[in-house]
Image (cartoon, rainbow, N blue to C red; front, side):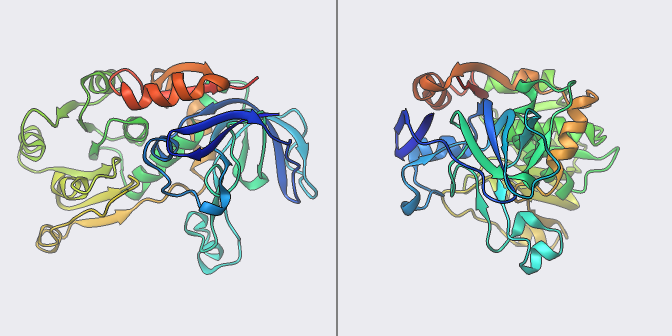
Amino acid sequence: MKALRWYGRKDLRYEDVPEPSPGPGQLKIKVTLAGICGTDLKEYATGPHMIPPDRVPLTLGHEFAGTVDTLGKGVTDFNVGDRVSGVGYYYCGECYVCKEGRYNLCVNQGFTGLTTDGCMAEFFVLPAYACYKLPDTVSDEYGALVEPLAVSLHAVRQGKVQPGDTVAIVGDGAIGLGALLAARAAGASEVYLVAKHKGRGGLAEKLGATAVIYLDEGNPVQKLMELTGGIGVNAAIECVGYPDTPQLTVELTRRGGIAVITGVFEKPGTIDFSTILFTERMLVGSSIYIHEGRTVIDLLADGRIDPGSLITSIVPLKDAAELGFEQLVQNKEANIKVLLSVP
């Protein structure tokens, strides 16, 4: 079968590899569409960051839609031919956090496309617990967005967003724009986006942003305070992963508000803890998802989340490096989510 393999920074190869076989409790999936995640992009452009040296070469990818090809031993909840999407984590089920139901924090966690071969291939395997059936009302294109939308929804839940709350989102990538959609679905009355790119900011307005604050147009904290009567927001969600964005996220919140850190950092961030101490703001992490993938599918099925405008293009897997990864690196104004069609 064909697969897109990561050999190193800016070194992706479309090549033949053996078809995988599912182990006990796993599914073998025939991939229809695979999405390029921001994590995949970082590994391509500046990696390695999360790919262990002993896993190279590695097939990338953890965002997908496809059909069940083969059932591993013991799998009873799926049938061959089921349309599915899913998420990326492997968890042990035995460590103390797994026993608490917090599988996203598993001590022994692995991740599809980073520690095991991923979905940018004709076939791949993953645990059945990380897979969800797609109803007829959810297209393959939307199904391929389940994983990143689950990240966004988990972040909104970490921010304890309730109907009527105000929210600020730092970052105009797929996770940030997904958080905008998730916050609206959660009933937020006002959602502000702090953006770098005008093209993405314009899209955010169409998706329901109350206002877009551009980083090159003055102090974003001051501008948000002007928009909120000097109060700030109930929850702010960081979706970038730059050293200065955690502090910005904290300062966007009101006294007693919640700042959520979702971005993946290449370098350590900095925080002035006096801005937390004297205001009783809360700073929390948001690590991927627990069961939000299932919830996202329900939201897609009933139309409470419509992510279609996040999809910039669909390109063949064989052209992923040039038409997918390079476009996302070189032209962030015009590209958000590129899907790869698999032969």
